Image 1 (cartoon, rainbow, N blue to C red):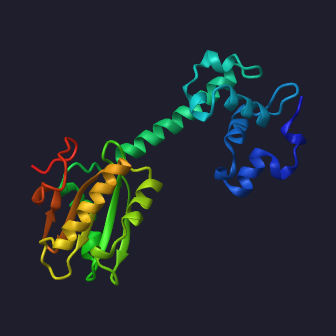
Image 2: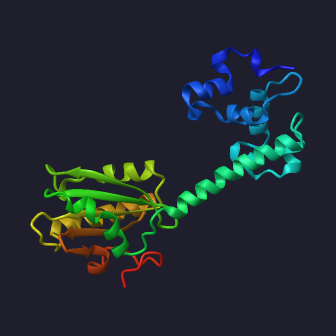
Length: 236
């Protein structure tokens, strides 16, 4: 039987975890920590890799029934149960994390998420909200501040961030240091350009807010000609 103890110290999963952190381990090595030992001719790491190959990745291992896991040589009921329990804990944590993210289904919700970030600046800033398929916040980012204006923003900058976050939709917001929330013609032109790009990339722009102290304007609400109606994002 191949044993993990036969590996160089720096290649053993538990030692590697202790030295470099759990994030340094591959999926096969993480499974090896749960499996603890392999079988004749196969170390625990190799058995973990075998499972990943058999079930086409970690998602397949998670979806497999206990009986299916047990059908793999070297994986008995105890090991299969450990794997299922560990992956289920991770799945529940991920679901809880998603549920804890703010739901942004109206201009008011978007404003609440962004108002303090934007109003703490006396210079013009542009923020982007990246949302998942259920319109919960994935991440927010300040795209620029100060020396540039909204009219100089590059559409590619906006969607580069959205794609990195695997966003299903986005919302933009910027401030007017003048305190006047009405959109300029350039605001409207660039918003329409971003909206059209979002249609092509299938990452819709849901809204664009202009925020000033004590007030904000939703372009989706005020400029209905730019935006399509969305049942998941209400301006009523």
